Image (cartoon, rainbow, N blue to C red):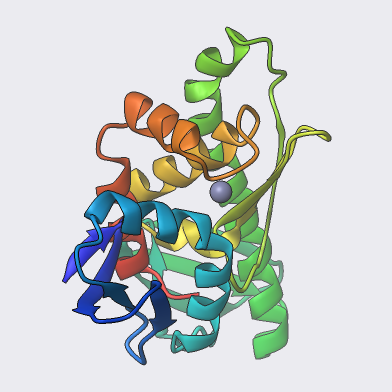
Length: 226
Ligand SMILES: [Zn+2]
């Protein structure tokens, strides 16, 4: 096993001419490489194919059960939170430590799902915005405007940046991850305001401002399945 671009990768060296790559059933990357190929070459290879890899990983991952019911266990920022659904005369969602209370006029699952989704989106956006504002001075110094952030459910990536429009979308599921993972994704997406691709300059920028970037990304892949 080798860690390439923060991903656990099984590398075997064979008498072949070019690098071959696939995703195993466990979601880990499997690479066959010609004998004598250096780790730095493989790292670049993986980096260049990140879009493809992320797409494949999205297909392979077993999606966890996120049903909304009384007693369900939610993940918020890496912690388990117990969901309580209480009939009420008005709708509200309140968190108290390891408990989240949905008071609902209608306790049917679809209605509670909607209340929970709205709550999580609002909380996630507030947190992601706060983190983005913390990193913003790095970008402001380079003449970049503060990006407009939004949150929605996505099935194959943690975030996406449209530099021309100055917009960044984050995956709502990112809110399930430990905060250090959230920070790594926020910085990653903001870095696209300066660098369009996942080139070596892009990663040099990330690791300059966040030396443990790859470890955080690896932790993210381990902690949340989307
Ligand atoms: Zn990216």
